[in-house]
Amino acid sequence: MVSRTIAQGLNGKRPSLHTSVVMSSDLAKSRNVLVRDAITADADYMLWLDSDHIFPDWTLLRLLGINLPVIGVTQPTRARTPVPTAHQADGAKVYTTPEMVKDKAMERVAFIGLGICLMDMKVIPQLEIQAAKEGRSLYPLFARTPTADPDKSDGEDSFFCRRLHDAGIPVHVDHILSWETKDIASIPMTMSDTLKSPEANLSGKSH
Image 1 (cartoon, rainbow, N blue to C red):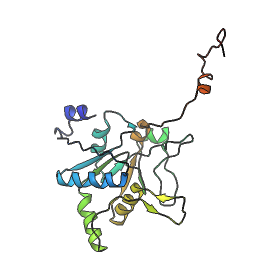
Image 2 (image 1 turned 60 degrees about the vertical axis):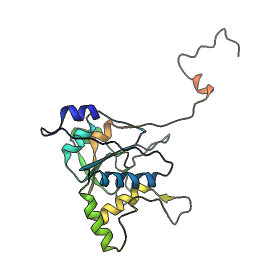
Image 3 (image 1 turned 120 degrees about the horizontal axis):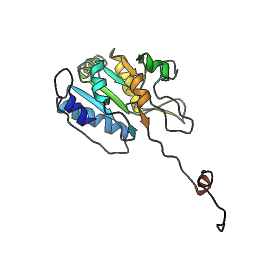
Image 4 (image 1 turned 90 degrees about the horizontal axis):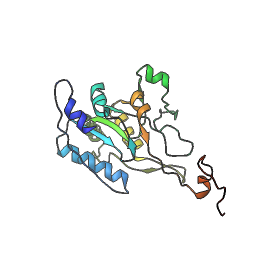
């Protein structure tokens, strides 16, 4: 993706890219640190990429070409029965369908996961203005917050989307990129699973 973006460029310009990597079990902290690093680097855009995603090499070129403040994907959860991560304010899940891909649909949503997401850094001054109105600092932009249900908490990306909403910043899903994105899931496998394979042939073998 980086090689294609630099080689091809956009509107006759070749972007300069800076990579920041944070490895931590505290995802909220990592995301706050990455925003700070992007501000320090005086970046024009910030591309969020989680390491457990597979995406096309044209990802950044497409997102830059869309030219929206915050644009990402609705990705599947890593579960045996996956559901989309993006949803609306009423909780309705945001699905991507082949019809949406054919129509090149872009959809405004309330919440997205930041597994793949491009953010125009012009949103930071807007977030700072909103923070000042509420009498607080810019950070945290990401935090896990408890809910009335002891078994549940709101994720750090939802927290950030609420910050964006309060500042009047729209969030969109690109259904074309959503369809092409894969979220890598780890499913435990056993020897009994190998016996279900068409290649399994136990004739003449001790068992």
